[in-house]
Amino acid sequence: MCDDHPDRPAVVRIQGEAEAFGAKMLDVCQECLDDLPLGEL
Image (tube, rainbow, N blue to C red; front, side):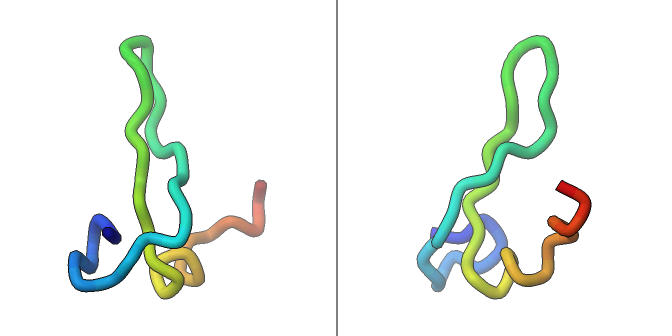
């Protein structure tokens, strides 16, 4: 399930903020994925 929209399935898991203790993983739906600024990757 999407972290921001619990009624929608997640289509991808993305590594978010990383730190010495690990990293936050983000589960996002297609709409959230389309809204992410991934052009700089």
